[in-house]
Length: 178
Picture 1 (cartoon, one colour):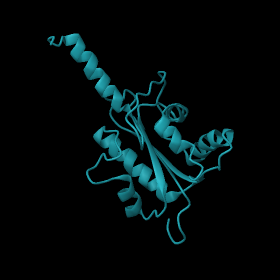
Picture 2 (tube, one colour):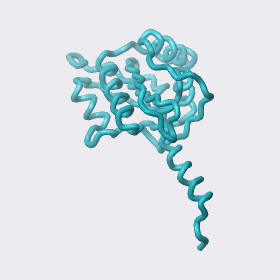
Picture 3 (cartoon, one colour):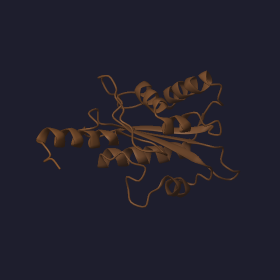
């Protein structure tokens, strides 16, 4: 067994930190690389609808409508990730996606894509589409509603932009549910 060198330690450490940059519902983390750009601090629902539905239309998928409940849950998750500088579906203990959805009153099924680092909406969508697990969420024909949030937080070693993204896409809720 060889003694670890400083260079090997730093390389392995960097790889470990970088792997946390993008988190999906299924599968392991993925590193997202984006070109340097001025990071955005906000996106509008209209912009999110336009970009997400353009991607869906290219694939002959049902278009997405905005859902206020999914938006609220996405905003809470993006803020939590920015506050904790943690990109994870469970950035708060005992707060799985299903718990967060039901607490907010959303009764249908949903998928969640998270990211930390992409500077703008085009970059985060492109990154999600390159990741098999995120791609499945983006192109699920059963998902017809969405909520998308962006929050700014401090930059970290693996999130140099300080941008935290949460996308929730869901099925049509049963009658009487959000």
